[in-house]
Structures are given as structure tokens and as C-alpha cells.
Amino acid sequence: MFINTLKLIAICMVLLIKMTFSSQAQSSFHIEADVVSNYVWRGQMINSNLNIQPTLAYTSPGEVFTLGAWGSYGVGSYYSEINLFASLSLGPVTLSLVDYFVDSPIESPGFFDYKKQSTAHALEVIGEWEVSENFPLLLTWGTFIFGDDLNANEERMFSSYLETAYGFELETTTFHVFMGVTPWESFYAESFNPINIGFGAEKSIAINGHFSIPVSASLSYNPYEDRVFMVLGISF
Image (cartoon, rainbow, N blue to C red; front, top):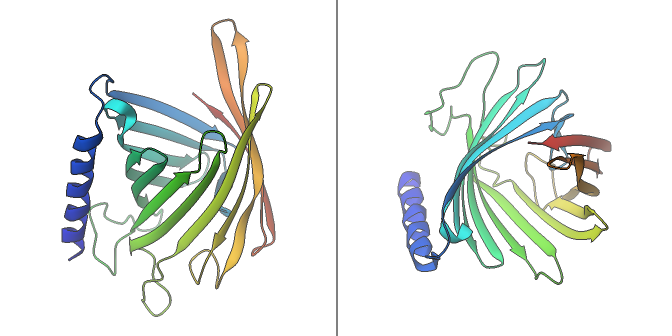
């Protein structure tokens, strides 16, 4: 049943891609890498060590469809995560499917194991809506629909995350403020709770006349866990 659902999603995405392709634009592959002081995600400390986070992705003509892989690897600690993703952009709306996979230092789970009781995968459907270019408010909703998202009774929680973010620029620096909540019991919190409140900034620092390095920093607070996080990152 689940495989048939995934097939249906894939067919719908292909049909939408064919309908929205731009013949003038060209497709592209790109490779990127971020280095972050620690790995914080949605108000959760995933790994406190320095992490290297590579991205390999293909973008279709018109930047309508993106297919890729993203990873995070702890330096000086055993942390290994690889996520596969596909996203479809339809104007101000972006729909994504993300397959999260975290390896274990004790007993390595099978990457191709998608059995309900043993899989280390977790699949999330994400919807994003940017209100407008003049009012860059970004609304994001993500819900896990399969995999490692079960409670103590082996029942699916459909862990969900809702975030509101607003971006703006001051001189050469881009800022964004955000607030994220989980609407019900999930692996984020036991019930409805704000879990990710903060702000961040990005700026390119010129090394010389031909080369610059994008630098980012964020400060966030998780009220549910009463924890504060600060992350510094550079991109290549």
C-alpha cells in the first residue's frame, strides 16, 4: 500500500513537471558543502560536534524540479546522516518529499530496509508557501508519514512541524526571524509546544576581488526543552 502511494506521488510530480517546464532554461547539477559549528535542527541538538554537510542535486529546466542528496557527518564523533529529497516548485508553493536516514555506530541498519518495525528511514512530506516577494513571509509545514516515527505503543505519531519565518535585508546582510511549533504529540514534544524561536543572518565575506565565502550565524531557543543554541556556518 505504501509503495503504491509513493508511485502515485511520483507519477503526479512527473505530470506536473511536464506541465510547468520552461523550454528556455537549462537544467543543472550542483555540488555544495557547509561546515557548521554544531548540527541543530528544528530546535533539536542533533550533534554537538563540528559537522560537514555536503549536497549533491539536480535542478530541472525552469528550476521546477529538484532531486538530490544531503548529508551531515560529525567531525571527531560518529554521526552519519544521509537524506534523499525531491521537491517541486509551483510559483510561491514548494512541495517536497524527504527520506531521512541516520546510521548507527552500534548496529548499522540496512539502507534498503523499509520494514515498519526495523527501518531507520523516516519519510516526511513538506509544504512551503512564500506569501510574496514584497512580503517575504515563509510558511512551512512538515509531517512524517512513514518510518521511524512511532511512539512507545508502536503507533505512528505523524510528527509535525509548523514554522513561520520572515526575511529582510540590511545593507549587505540577509536576516530572518522564525518561530516553529509542533501541533501535537511527536518526537519534538509531548503535546503542542513552541520548540524553535530565533533569528539568523547570512553574509558573503570577500577574500579578494574574485572570491568570497558565505557565512551564516543563528541564535535559537527551544522553550519546551529550555535550551539555547548558537550555530556558525560557512558554505562552499
